[in-house]
Length: 98
Image 1: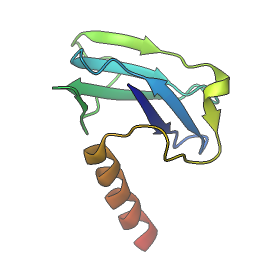
Image 2: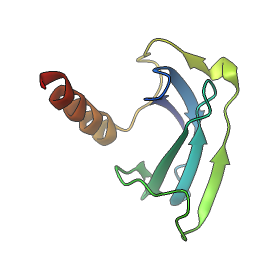
Image 3: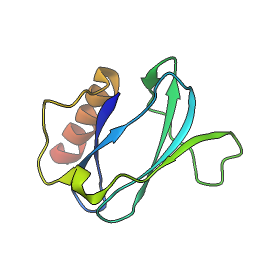
Image 4: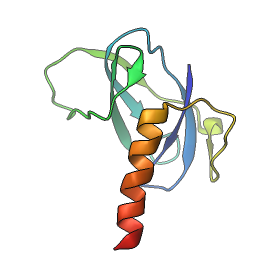
């Protein structure tokens, strides 16, 4: 499935194809700045759980998308996990309110 990610380091959006049928830990590198995003997949969904780089559990995939996958705007055409999207939106609302 194709997912849209937002990099907090370089403020760019990028698309990543994840096989959410495989539960486990994924390490996704931003194609613009190389910042590493850690994601845990469970039950076919990307969870809100993050894991550190030195975590002992199994790494399912180390993903390095091509630079052509990045952009400066968000698109509604790419699939998103609604739970994760709502979670990030609520966190952004708190930060903006401060």
